[in-house]
Image (cartoon, rainbow, N blue to C red; front, top):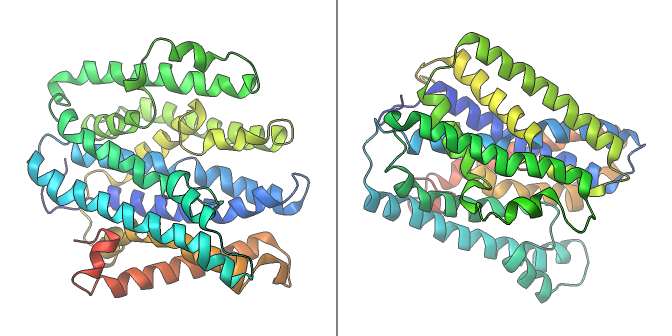
Length: 362
């Protein structure tokens, strides 16, 4: 169990894996969105994109569930709202405006395109104007955090069976209809539409991962159950790869089904990764100062990485100027540059008392 002022190795490793996955997925998305499925750019980067995009958001939320719903850790709802939720709201507003200005005015100026107030406005409203609308996660986490004080009332060991039923309910109501929806794109009436008629909204979207994070970190799974989860996770990875590569032409939106973990395959894949890291790290405390520091920077890196990604892809070193024209090599170069610059920026801002709050550093 996580206790106050104690950092567990498993969660810090998972955070690092998740942010590396986010950056890698966003970078590979450039090729998936801009190249035909029969090109080497699409084929190689699709593999990276599917494997990296399917787990980070789910894992981030499972970590939140494991830590924030931990009944062994003291919790003050008023302090949580004031110290955690409210700052999250404020930085969400700041960075949404920042990226709105960047896409509406900054990036067009750098690429010699006309600036656009409508692009700025549309980004503020629904993140239009970007292939990497990562700020949606901030809005989502603001909503999830607002639920934490309520969930703390009944997410307890004594209610284990009830929580398990909620997890199963979320899976049935959300993951199965979402997966079946792949086969009914364009239909007048889908399985998801049918399920929606029962008004089971509390069991939908991201809340399942808060419960999963608490459950999987609170109750140790037997080895045979973990093996089954690993097998299902591996199978799910292959299914996602095959599905996107095979049906991307007939069903262009199929890639979107695996981005947030709401379908069966990406959910199982995310659970497998979470359980695997918990199992290998057990309850070891993180005694690495560098990893501790890096872990505290993850949130800020998430916020700022898209800025550097766009600069490299569109201004500084676009793929069209890359002499080798080998997507994986280009991917690694840009990946390292984006991560390094994001880290350096957060490191510099972490030294400033007030500016560090822009990156949720305390």
